[in-house]
Image (cartoon, rainbow, N blue to C red; front, side, top):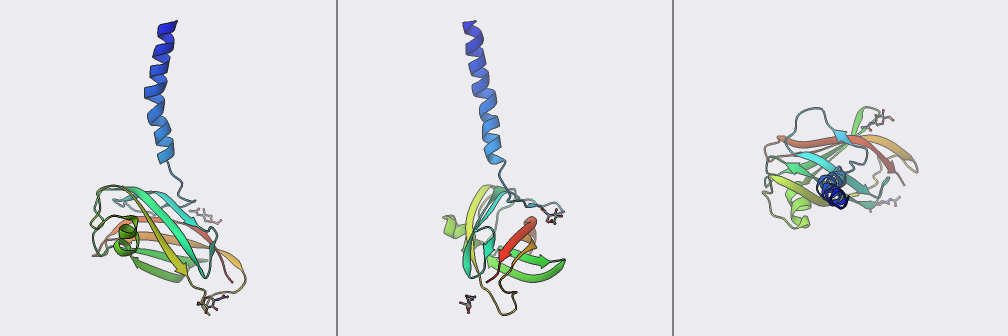
Length: 162
Ligand SMILES: *[C@@H]1O[C@H](CO)[C@@H](O)[C@H](O)[C@H]1NC(C)=O
Ligand SMILES: *[C@@H]1O[C@H](CO)[C@@H](O)[C@H](O)[C@H]1NC(C)=O
């Protein structure tokens, strides 16, 4: 009986620990999914705060995953926003300068696990609607210096306009 419990304990220790770790890693993508296509650097963690996004405030992002290809210097991160199928906004940022380096790493970075923080101040412009909360569709990608898409996720994002 004693041996049985020892074995059971060892079983729990060795079988369940990696499972528990796996569950933590099975990160939230905030409702996003990977874009159609085959991209070498998989994003498994994506959050933005505040959610819904508020205009004239800084939105803080976290992005993480596993890369097969290094993110090179000159990489950029693009956010394309659609409403009812129409492209309404396109933001691009230098991925190394605005995400990788502020997270404490130099570019090129990877291959391997990655976790970066970024932010973007979404200004309310005259072209924006006023005093409404709208849900749009965002496609977010990270591309190399030459424009090869390394990662791409997409999903619904709700924005509060002033
Ligand atoms: C985005 O929202 C639409 C409409 O509610 C829904 O059909 C679609 O599945 C959502 N897409 C994702 C990736 O969650
Ligand atoms: C949002 O910020 C811009 C730039 O600072 C400013 O011109 C505008 O009046 C602000 N909008 C509101 C509704 O506060």
